[in-house]
Length: 436
Image (cartoon, rainbow, N blue to C red; front, side, top):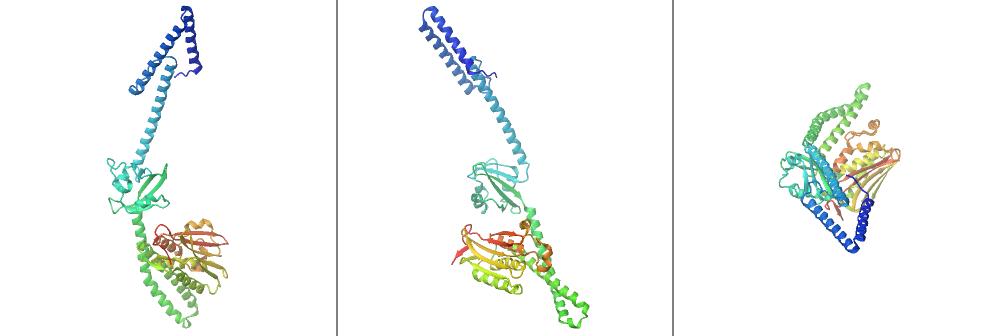
């Protein structure tokens, strides 16, 4: 398309007007000449407008009408814009088709909804996992089709930091994990992944640990019993046997503690959210735990302070919560040098109850913090013989808090101590928090 500057067309119009004036002067009818000239120009303009209207509304796919001058440039310009628009639309449609084809090839389900939850598009895997039908489900609200009770509150909450695990509505043996991402004007991109194999493997692992721990308990009890009997007659034994027997008893007790913690962790995992709940007097519970901790640290003379800043009580499983709080406090006692300080607090922040244990111990390098709640993970393995720990304490704490819909926050600096804070929910379920 040749683009002509506006001055080109103005020059042509001025030339025609000038010729008309000359003709009018020659024939002696200047006014009538101008009337005829402008009337002809208006008629020609209306004819071009009619051709443009007919082309745009009836013959859009055909080439533009032939014309000259300004109108010819207008026809060619519109046709050029239409061609570019069509090419861009074809490229975008090809890209969309390719994205849809590649998404359909995924084994994970992909669903797109608007901000109301109306389904715009989903792939084949979503049909297989959730039973959606492309013919009739488009435009339907997703939580009307996916009727798992937990899904609608999760979808509407807009809090998607953690995924949601549900059962497939068409196959109750299939475990699915749902992860939602907000985009655009609060539209949703929903990813659905089959985690059945991972769930089975985790169940097998938990069963294996539980079964092995049960099997180890009996022989350990027998060994420990005989060792205690031998130690009762240590004076009658040869001197060279006394040290090995003492070491054997120490290690057998350590193994027994490990088995006990493994069984406790297995029991906590299996209980999940099906807990026997009761109203717990937090003040009385923490006073008992601090009393036990002071007895344990009598030789080190730790300064253990208990600060109760709220009279709130919790509704939960007393045994599990006591185990979690005790583990945090005893860990602080173990890793705080003699004469150090340990502070235990119970307080409210933003309406949510918090339990924290802060110590003046050796501290933890921040690089280790993300892995502290893993089983048997130690930030400093060299201190294990001194503390006698099993490496399962924080794993137990993590699973107790998961069962109570709570979270664990850890802050620490090497040489400046650590602070472990348990945050219990305030608004998600009002039955968790009650006030006297």
